[in-house]
Amino acid sequence: MKKLLPVAGLALAVLPLSACGAASAAPSHARPVAAQVTAAADRYRNYADLARHEKEGRDYKRVQRTPRGARVAQIAIHGGQIEPPTTQLADYASATGKDAFYSFEGLKKSGNQVLHITSTHFDEPRALKLLKTVKYTVSWHAAKGDTATTYIGGRDTVLSQKITRALRAKGFKVSNPPGRIDGNDPKNICNRNARGKGVQLEITTAQRKAFFKGGRLDAAWIADPRHRTAAFYNYVRAVDSVLASL
Image 1 (cartoon, helix red, strand yellow):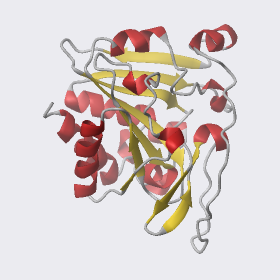
Image 2 (image 1 turned 120 degrees about the vertical axis):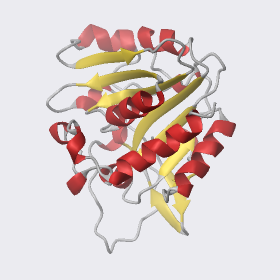
Image 3 (image 1 turned 60 degrees about the vertical axis):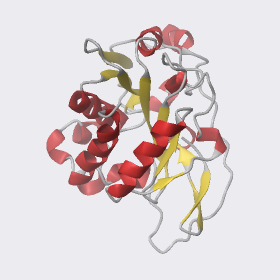
Image 4 (image 1 turned 90 degrees about the vertical axis):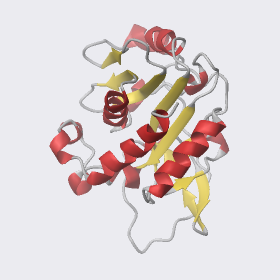
């Protein structure tokens, strides 16, 4: 979830939410400025470190569904208010496709970014156990950016290309990810399934806001399905249309 990419001839600065916190929209007249920004280091090295300092059920929770025979896992390791609305996207996508679902969710009233564990260090045992049982993974993430686009990475390049085509066919913009969020590291959680390769979706703030009426991403608002726009459903269905053919 990170940095910078040319889109439609402009250099667009895209930052991870872990680096910046909640995104603020740039003025409509502002020209995107190319910039290299280093993400802030995670507070916790891994899940065990986090679990020693944070209380499950108060600060965070783990949610999982594993339908019998599921071949796909839809995951949101920065769910809840760490990177909203990745939990809602992965949850709906998995239910629609009858896939396995996993979400690590921030529950704090504020400051949920301290619960962020980068994808290459995320080693929560339930997630790892689940991924060993499936062949395909879609990992949902949030990036900062005032242009609506999705950066698709991961080692499963064939599946990534199919999802790219499906999203573009529905009118969504898709861009190649910059190196820091290309998802190619074998240690990245998206690649830790039975095949050793998965897909990582990094969705900018502007695109995520388009999924909800009023562009709101606060916890109470995104928890209510009545606030979802047609874009939410069209996006998820485009992804699931590819997974259904696996």
